[in-house]
Length: 196
Image 1 (cartoon, helix red, strand yellow):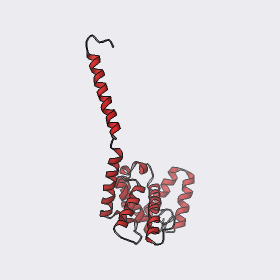
Image 2: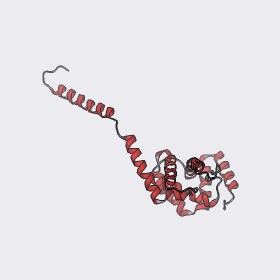
Image 3: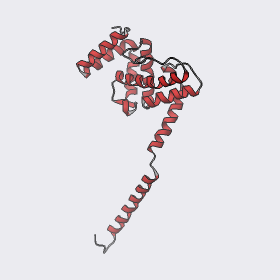
């Protein structure tokens, strides 16, 4: 089953999705297997469980589509700023892209899944780092997972995640006050001769 014809691939997936979810996933997996091979397909069993919770519940093809849309959304502003041709809608979409780009986008999505970072955040940060490096040509998806770019995004993600999950002073004070109030109430309850 060779699916090098982009429109045939898209038609088969779209038609399968109208039948039922199980049929859709089965067809998507067969198409992906024919384009990627068993090793890449098997890798999803390792990386999908550690993907960011926003994307973890998606089937691999649906996750790759979501990643492709985030990638496109990050690359259009880059192209406009760099004065180069913007990628067309669907360029990275696994339903319509070339077999070569299909494989590259799928594997790039797997790398991002392994880091546990949301797709939109990763793509925006990676393209930002690409720009900061002074590169004015359109990056390939795999270029956005180069070790220096991935390390930059992961560092920023950890800092932003820590900042977002750090309790504010008001929350800390409320927690301290609540703990103090509970301690006073416990002491009063244990004091003989007190009416409760």
